[in-house]
Length: 141
Image (cartoon, rainbow, N blue to C red):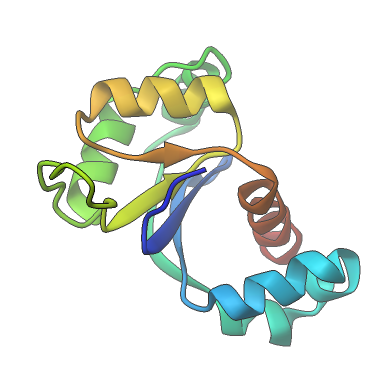
């Protein structure tokens, strides 16, 4: 788990890539304690999570290509560009200092692929991230 101060979460879907920002860790803690009720309650969930950016796929072929790459734990050029454009600038790590933000990704292998493609990026994939993404999916469908 990352010690970063801010958490951004990547959600990939057939429509495109979305980047959500966790604005209230206190709310997230409450969400995880009573997970099912809190995740499905849009009022509670929307106080803790905000949409930061969205990039729709240009065509069905583009969507299929990107989602296949995600399933194969590969970071496409489109995803790389989306993250570079929408994530805060990555600063070189100073020893003993936690990064300013972390990117939450649902799959650990995919998180590794993204981190390899964007040097200096701190990625995490844990139960908190999975619950946040589950809430995003509930409210986007």
